[in-house]
Image (cartoon, rainbow, N blue to C red; front, side):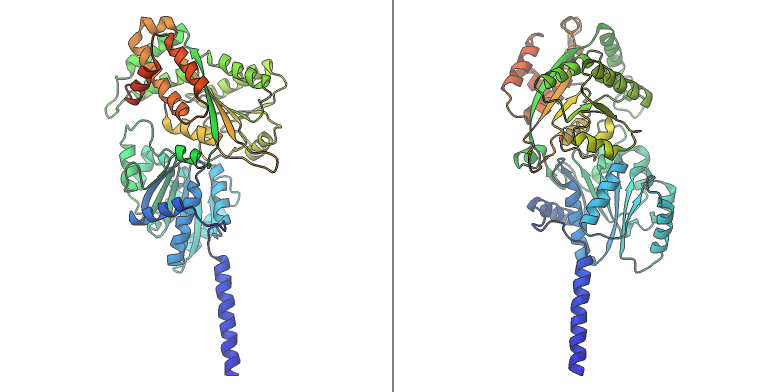
Amino acid sequence: MSSNSKMRKTISNIFAKIETDRKAPKFPYVEGPRPYQIEAYNNWVDNDYKGLFAMATGTGKTLTSCYCLIEEFKKSNLQKNIIVVPGKELINQWSDELKLSNFSTIIKWASNNSKLNSDINYIKLLMHDSNLKELNIVITYDSFVSDKFLKIFRDKMKDFTVVFDEAHNMGADGFMKILEDIKINKTIGLSATPLRLWDENNENIFIESFFKTQPPYTYSYSMEEAIKNGFLCKYHYEPFFVTFTNSEWDEYLKLTQQLHHKNEGETINTKAALKRQLLKDQAGNKNNAVLEVIKMLVENNNFTNTLIYCPKGIDHNLEDRYIFLLQDEIKEKFPKINTATFLGITQGRELLLNDFESEKVHMLLAIKCLDEGVNIPKTMNAIFVASGQNYREFVQRRGRVLRNYETDTFIKEYAHIYDIVVLPSIAQFFNDRSTAERLIISEFKRLYEFYDLSSDKFNTYKKIKNELEKYGLTEGYINTMVKNEIIN
């Protein structure tokens, strides 16, 4: 009898362990984590559980941080994590990733969660339980700094591992101030390009200090490595050159003169810089170049799955006006092409992206809302109407285009990037050579970033060389100036 009792207890313990293991977070793929994901975790642990992972789009930033959370669960038997993301699309993607990795009690703290209020009440109950072992919250940056969230978590954040996805968003002034008063023991930052464009308020110093790291950061995986190792597809790159009109050039010169008239604490006149960038992004001759690219795609019967990155505006009305005018021009010139816009206000985004993938929508015109986290791997062509000088933005956009895509009948081997580059006219160049040359250098800084990692460069090199010769400039000279970063 005693022997049977011991056997029943042993069997019961075995089944209990099996059930516990079944419910435990685990790496979602049988082949296990990649060696570089293990290295990233070890570097994070060695850096006192603080770190910034600067990893190219497509290399598995999300899964790398999930692996860190899984390994920490193995040590503590706790899954108490907060994931901070910039937008609603990433809320859903992160929730799916956590579920795939077998995490439980996952709460989406976002306005589109219809049961958010009841979820918050449930969180309050859980937080009063001293034996709390499972709580995983995915929340937007805006909600993270809200009174409603901080009232619950401000003093409890030290008990959670906090992951900041697209960590450059932490550089917003109000966000930095709030984080200074919160103690977090374990934190991970994720970004393809962590630093912001202008470091006016010491954002970069703050981010690096917060994660206790400096370039090349706690772990880095470059886009060059990602393409070489097959995590991103190869791509062809072709620039299309346009010039400013005379009135646009006059405005460009005026804004350039205003750059150094800065307010106290600024490193540059931000307002003038943003206006000047917008002028470049919305240069009138760019639309003709877009139509030229589309004509070429149509002639090659390669116009489907095309993404058009359009310029931002000072306000949403200007953005919408520009993108709809461009859409109308495309419809008028190519009536058989089905286009759609992807804006911040766009409803039914998932359905729209599905239509794009199935080629019911041939071309998608988008602004900044596709920069962070939205996966559109079937994109075959990308037209960059506006890239800007913001390194982070155009690198992220390129990463979106280079996502691998494979079905039973199709493998995406190459993507095609068409970059609309705005330069001074020949007359403008010789009338104000100093400013004009700096403009060329600033545009070529982005151009070379795209060009350097592209495939089949010979024809592109000839096109670049021929364009520069119009100004009496050599490719070697501009390349040297770009590398020395002699730009305003």
